[in-house]
Length: 70
Image (cartoon, rainbow, N blue to C red; front, side):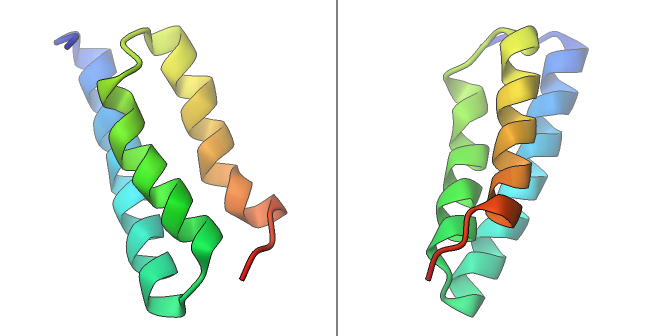
């Protein structure tokens, strides 16, 4: 795990969005925000490069707006 301050801040930012999407998806019964929330919460553990983590995280944050699921 990378302990660089920028990496920690980015992973905390994406983790907060992930928790919010997870709770929203669970309460509304929608699969897309639920899955994006789980992925946003977990993926910083596996991607240690900040230049790769930020674009993936942004794509996952905006994905529920473009993907409609039940």
